[in-house]
Length: 245
Image (cartoon, rainbow, N blue to C red; front, side, top):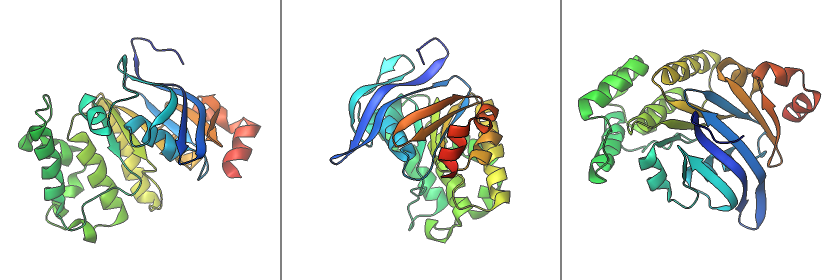
């Protein structure tokens, strides 16, 4: 995918290793402005490695990562976050001994200490969180250790939005959750898009991906094997065979 005025995020033939093992092999994908894109594949296919590469948690051996027209391939993770790339990890990353409110406060304090401009103030941040996840209001005083899986996902997504990202990376946001909670998070992604934030989701379940994605990429053994409309994936024998194993 070539960069254009509407492209927020582009990966251009990136190779990434974990230790001596090559995980990603020439991965290219793009996310346009206001778009939700899903990267679908089995466990171990390279989804999380792709997300970690974009965020700067793993170094890219070759290729380029371009965000809003700027090459960010060699920037540190915190620099990418300040540029406008938000991230909610698969395990949510909630501080277990802090309350939900304190988890949000840390994000705000870090942004103030870094001198970031354009981030939400405490009141604006609270309004944004409760508008997206009104149910969070009921457990802001609860410690992270005592949150359910779905509650942790909500807090992780809301915390990522605290820095006003242009692109939000969600790693397996629906994994292990009850169907009703999955539907709630899919609704939230739709609202996040309406806020003008582009979304890239790593997802194992094709049916979940089809409910939220404008476009879909399928990955297997570290290589992109499909790009297109979600419905088109259903008619692709190779994609269905690969995803279902």
